[in-house]
Image (tube, rainbow, N blue to C red; front, side, top):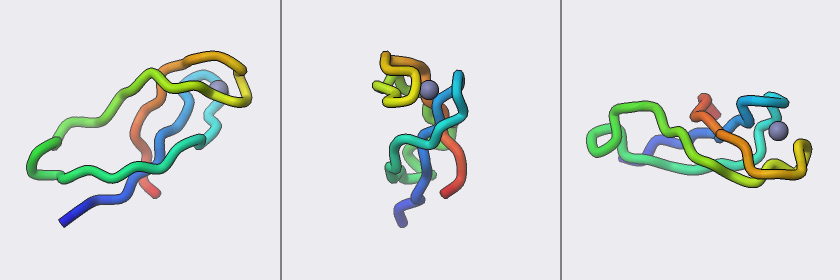
Length: 50
Ligand SMILES: [Zn+2]
């Protein structure tokens, strides 16, 4: 069972990426450094609900 989520920029709140994860394997919130086209640099992106 895969859970669909969005990755939201923590600085501009833009939702730039979608991803999936398995809740059993990854119960904690995802937090990734990703390129944000709004900030035009890498920022921390946190999991939000799709
Ligand atoms: Zn941003």
